[in-house]
Image 1 (tube, one colour):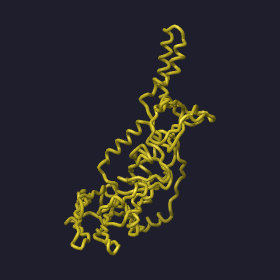
Image 2 (cartoon, one colour):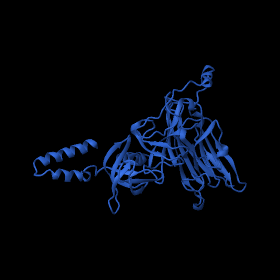
Image 3 (cartoon, rainbow, N blue to C red):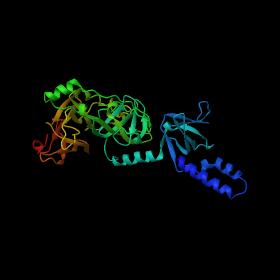
Image 4 (spheres, rainbow, N blue to C red):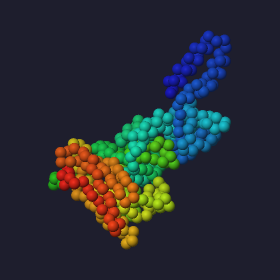
Length: 382
């Protein structure tokens, strides 16, 4: 953008040499902002931000703008290591002033996020999550300076559509909250004595020792104008619904869940509550142990399947189906209506190939759930 500004000013100066009176240069230069950057826009990502009269320490607040507001960017300046944009608001006065760059997401980055969102438009959320600390939203599951979209506030909630196990780097930070253009200080990690002892005893590797997990998330406009991106998993708390969290075990965590019964409109909760307060019901649940189970360099998304039915008269859950060990890849798809439903997933067969498997869910005369699994479940890879 700076190079483009310089080119236009240079062109105007050359024009001045052929036009009587250099007053033209001053006049046009003062309006160069109307010629530069009109195609570049920024969207406010902070909850609220101020457009100021200058980027100096002492400056007047001209206009308060809220998250999601679009501004035209006219030029940019770095002053005392702080990046600023000169912008024009789209209010009645076409207010022009300065705003800190960290409060905006540029149109190019926003469009990239929207394209990623289109890839998952037909995928149901696989889980719900909430940030327990401020964290960067990124275009890809890696900590590089050029893929930061924006910083999400602590407590932001979202739907999770996918995740990825990324090999852990020895010097990678445990949090991802550094601002764009800054590098999070890292310190060398020492070998854990328990891990080394486990290796000597030939004990299985654990995923948390070998990988960092990243979540692909879908956000509401209230939290982010960018609809989709990747979040570092160590700063995410999965919001397991309150009526089934009791059935989760420390060595076998729930990774995705879908209701199998209908929820009345009055029973639905907001995205902020992430279904934690929903009434008890019947669920299909996938779980994952913390052991490394890579096949051809790929880890499974889940290794266990459970279907919980809910007896509303006795007000208790019962196990309608529980698989043995499996090796599966998401997404989970639930189809059907009323008492006749099914869910499909990708499971690895004995030949190492992924196959779509369909589980049929019905109810018997007493209203209890019955699950009919694929006939070849005993021949699948574990």
